[in-house]
Image 1 (spheres, rainbow, N blue to C red):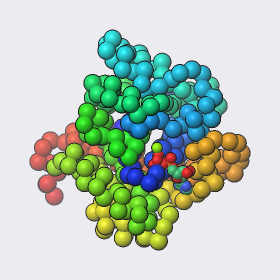
Image 2 (image 1 turned 90 degrees about the vertical axis):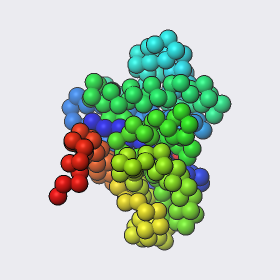
Image 3 (image 1 turned 120 degrees about the horizontal axis):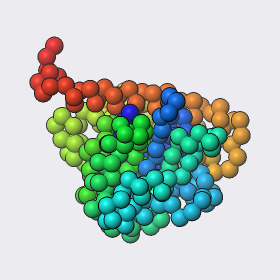
Image 4 (image 1 turned 180 degrees about the vertical axis):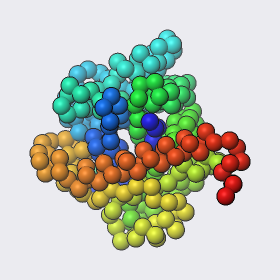
Amino acid sequence: MAVIALAGASGGPGVTTSALALLLSWPLPAGRKALLAECDPDGGAVVAGYLEGRVPGPHSLANLQVADRLGRLEAGLWEQLINLSVPETQADRLLLPGLKHPAQAAGLAGTWPHLATLFGAWHRSVGCDVLVDLGRSGAGGPASALAASADVVAVVVRGTLRAAVAARPRIEALRELAGGRGAQNLGLLLIGEGPYAERDITAHLELPVLARLPFDPQAARVLTHGGEGGRAFARSGLLRQAAEAGRRLQRLAWERQEQLAAPVGAEGVV
Ligand SMILES: Nc1ncnc2c1ncn2[C@@H]1O[C@H](COP(=O)(O)OP(=O)(O)O)[C@@H](O)[C@H]1O
Ligand SMILES: [Mg+2]
């Protein structure tokens, strides 16, 4: 089980859409769960987008501030989750909807680190993989705990000059945050749009491509704005490749956990 954080840069590279595609296709053996936590300080997008506002109540990450103060963060987290499983009875693909207003982010300053710890523990205690949407600015200041404690941090980027230029400062900040040994968990989730080949992007950003998603505007539109995608959506290249990307990210996270569990110094032994 794993905690995987997705980060973006300016220009809407597709973090939320990719995170949702991963959640809906995430490899789930029986009894396991996956959670998408919308921790973007600029606000959540899935409720008004993919879910078209059709939600069972005012579920939001923002409500965890009070739960945390009362010392009941874990119980509070369960109460805020929305079930995105199809069929619904499975209840294994869960969403923690994000903030409704960016101003709510400041109030969570003390909660981000507790949430990071809870996600880390949850993947063991609940058997739940956690996908954390950090948005384009999340993981700075107190929210940095979310990136620092993730097994893998994937920066979503497209193969365009604009995307590569925008991603660079974001990657530098995340690299600094992770520091030394931790920077090994950082890489790219490449969306196949634009003229740049994978090796150009890798060379420019000095990071490996951890996983890939296709440029698929039709399927992406359903994830971003909702609507009946029908069979074409269910069979789309985006969802199919998201399943493969999920397997890769999950495997990398496990490898990372093994590395961290290994005795210090073992890494260098050939
Ligand atoms: N794989 C993709 N193929 C085509 N369009 C995409 C893809 N991923 C995202 N998009 C589109 O890009 C735009 C921004 O996506 P979004 O997920 O909201 O970005 P972010 O969360 O990084 O701000 C949306 O219009 C979305 O439909
Ligand atoms: Mg987003």
